[in-house]
Image (tube, rainbow, N blue to C red; front, side):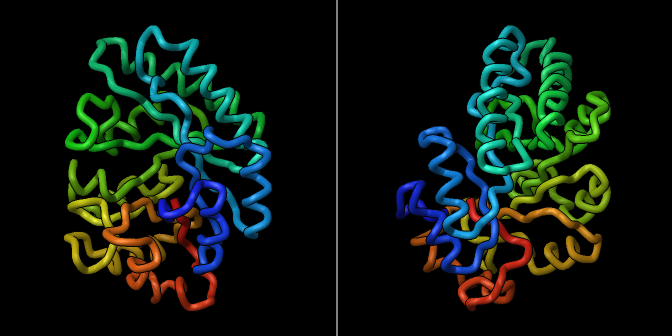
Length: 250
């Protein structure tokens, strides 16, 4: 969102419409200290960044993965960000499963020292052919094998709708391992409004009923401009000069 502006200018725009927190998917084009300054100036909270490389499940790339994770932790610490999405990467190697478990376990131990949580996000195979992590059950199994308290599921309803459907049931069944939620419309990954197939009014209500205490990130591509597409969020406080309690801008 807010692709109309440079990365450094997006924080003020997000704050002006009522967001209280932001995801910064790829912060590495700017110095971490400068990003942290802009986040503070906008009175926002940085709640999620991605690793700079998608290699966690790729055998033979352990050194590059660890170097990337170290960089992500440096950025997260400077930003005061407590969650890092650990990108699995594309691979069909037979050793991918064990590689992913060992890399995530190492990353979790490194992150724990900084009070940071590692998130695993299944991606759909239509937009991301060959990606290793593609389903919520697979992610849950890996989280169980990693055996670290600071490893959680990043539940992106866009990907789950394409791969699994049954979103409310999946939310309930995986709720105990979910650390972060993201929303966008299907098809097109546009606004989560009534011009797409997911009933977000129902899902957001279900999230509240389950007692979710994390963040819900608006990770979508506006059809026109960001501001033009925010009408869907007025019931949740955006564009109304009131806090948007459980939303983040990406």
